[in-house]
Length: 191
Image (tube, rainbow, N blue to C red; front, side):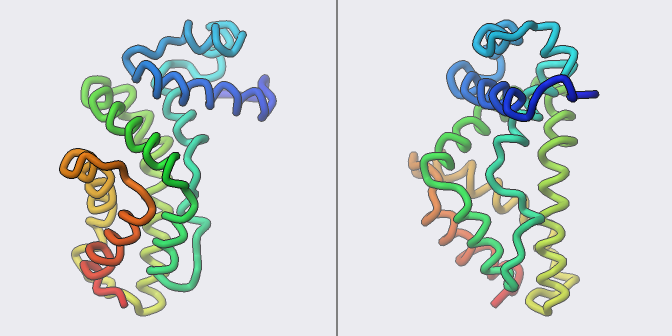
């Protein structure tokens, strides 16, 4: 869908408004009316630019994402994971973790949202993670036939979801760094 009518600054403002509203009212409470009101735009503009609420939410989350995994190449898998973690501060991690937990329910009940998130957010990030892991295989850090390679996304999502549930504590850089060093890298057989 063409998005050329909005300036990048205006598009960014709309995306940040969606993120704010998701944090305030959750996915089910977020309406195109509320986005239009808060951004002083029309619902027609929103629908013309994004087509649907799930598409707008998915694009907003993609825009909001602080780390573009494919861009990270420190020369070692450990360095790449630490760089991914270091690109987001603790406050943002806590906010994003809460928002993703809230979206998990909405995804289970809204196939259109699930599809939009898969296409616009998850699949590009999975491709980026695959590139990071492939470079580690090429450098000889991990074996190409290690069955844990396909489970890295599951391990990382598990870490983000489990800590608040099990420990009632937010996800932060120290926790994720420890998790990567103690769980992910050993599972991959990485140095």
